Amino acid sequence: MSDAHLTARALESLLGVWRGSGAGYQALADRIRLLVLDGRIPMGTRLPAERDLASRLELSRTTVAAAYRTLREAGFADSVRGSGTVVRLPGPALALPATGGEGMLDFTKGALPAASALPAAARAAAEELPHFLPDPGYDLVGLPHLREAIAQRYRDRGLPTDADQVLVTVGAQQAIALIGRTFLTRGDRAIVEMPTYPHAMEALRLAGARLVPITVTPPEEGPHALGAEADGWDVDAIEQTIRRSGPALAYVIPDFHNPTGASMSAETRERVLAAAAAHGTIVVADETTADLDIDRPGEYRPMAAYAAGAAGGAPVLTIGSASKSMWGGLRIGWIRADRPLIQRLVAAKPASDLGTPMLEQLVVARMLASIDEILEERRRQLGEGRDRVRALAAELFPEWSVPWVHGGLASWIGLGAPVSSALALAARNHGLLIAAGPRFGLDGAFERFLRIPITHAPADLERAFSALSGAWAVASREPAPYFDAPALPNVV
Image 1 (tube, rainbow, N blue to C red):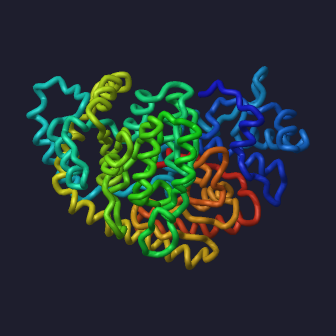
Image 2: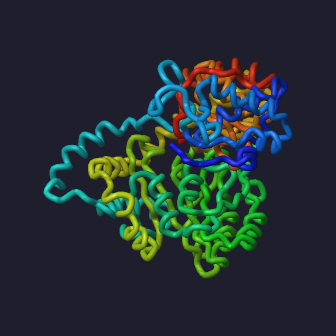
Image 3: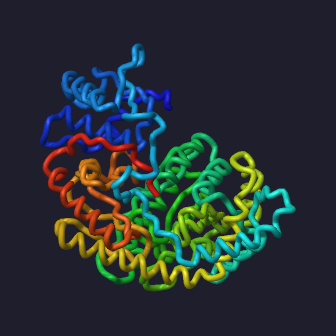
């Protein structure tokens, strides 16, 4: 529960474009409810006073009062004596299931099912485990043979790496949080892409960072290679942002960016690293999706491999993970960096955990030995998903803009109108959970976009698009009606 008080100005930023053709109080209540379900307004947060919000939004106080009353009647708010209107969720406070309930299709996660090699690797790892049982089992840095296997993977991709340059973590999310706690102090600026992975923003904010956005746009349509002039990043603007803001850290997703699917060209990587080196900025390259290549033309080395040409050598922390390519249930990630940076991270790690699960490390080490076969399987799955999403969108929503993605886990689709939140709400009435575009941005941005994963089986994709078709008929006309559904799961 939160003790926070949301100001009228802050709520206005979160609301974004919320007005529709229907009743103003209904549209306002719908948008606040979505913000609660998305986790952007924590439970227990006190909403602005009716008079303050009415003045800020240029509404009558009666309209705001009606919106608050509607939220209370639907179970999304309570009136607390001395505290005003406080947000809540309907039903038991702890009833937050991983999925949307029986019969609901969950498209909030861009994640593949387990690789077919996993069961055999798990059995072999279980047989191997007794060899390690005489040890205490508290492993701060990672099993030596796993770190060597990860290092070899980087060497194979063109980045010289030794095992002592690798720190194994409990998933990539812990890696992001650990980096934030170690290299940021409260008030430091941190560059983040817009849109971006929501939980990275949350981790950097918790570390005390002030977020400075840079824009990433989806790749152009068509199966062709893109240079720096059209790769999705405005590198001139990035250089200016680094010069003006002097950020302590820059978090980027250079390969199959989440959610746009874009990939940085070699020239963009070099220029970003050079600008970072010139201003003492640490670059955090989240490469958890780098292996999920369907048919990307050209060769792309890890971002840190381009740092040698940067003036003074840019410090680069590279994040990797087994969860995207092998299975989300394998909570094994890692950080690759120069030795002094790894030593700082190891020293800071006990504050959050005292060791990475041993059995999961053994499983991942086994699977890395057959990573080429695993990635070929993923290439087929993602290619089929991408092509099916494009075909369904063309058939049902010819007005939508569907970028051509060469890999990654999702398609960042342009809706042509600022209705993403309304569409996400209406989709729940049709059995589909999907994250609205603003979940991936700041201050209510990206209402014209929707992330659709390409990771699901064809039957599920067809069911999802059928749900979106029914929801679109509502969302494109007016704000979505109320519904009875549990809270939105974490976006992955």
